[in-house]
Length: 313
Ligand code: TXA
Ligand code: MG
Image (cartoon, rainbow, N blue to C red):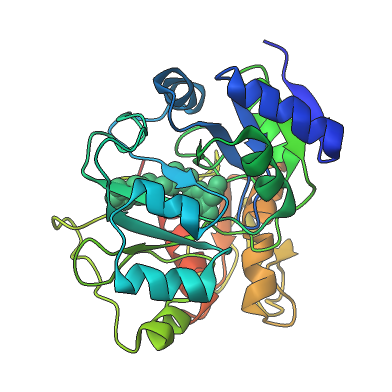
């Protein structure tokens, strides 16, 4: 199949919406990373997502909707959901809620579970496609399963060219790491650190988030430990460079091939993370060494992605 390149103007959005209606896949920009979108009500479209990514099908997908009213069609709502949705939607936050029965979503999208992950993206092109298609959009990151997430249309083409119908080119993604996932099927739980810092969510809830036990029952099933991986090995907490390595620095690390943020700004570092990993990977080093990054605010999401990139495969 030939993968079309679409602009985010009106003609591009209409062409993308027609492909969604036809149960095809479209990569679309969001404020976090590019998503690989298909109609979440269509088993065929959702199966195509798993096939294009080479993703294990037990792994449930996030369903994107245009606003909170539409989200309520698919989930059993609660006070905590109301509070977080009012504070942070549209934005880089995903809520896992009890699935509403007979709501019309394909059971493939929730991997047969009785919960559903919902997100209202802020990106104008994502909003435009949601409204033009009228479909809830299942959209995992638009990369082959286990590889580095895409923050640019070129990254999507590199990984999925010929496997999907179209790419909506919206330039670079502003946040640069995936959404924060909060479980609300029980006590509010941080299932995945991401683009919205956990501290800000705790302030809005007026209490701490639970953290799932590693290997415990309440985890986000997609959180396999090796993930976001470049082709070459990754070494963390690097203070010095070893033979054949390229160094990814932070806050002006001497000898760095690229720096996540020369001024030590974690927002800038998150926005650069995947693009810099893509760039270093393409330079064909023996390994990528990464300087330490502080573990607060967005640094938690950055370190989570780096640990998975470095995990044994
Ligand atoms: O920023 C993002 O969230 C991006 C953009 C495209 O919106 N999307 C994204 O989707 O990261 P994906 O499919 O790569 O991540 C989905 C993760 C799953 O791996 C799983 O951990 C969690 O969401 N998830 C989905 N449904 C769930 C459920 N019912 N219960 C628990 N976790 C769930
Ligand atoms: Mg992903």
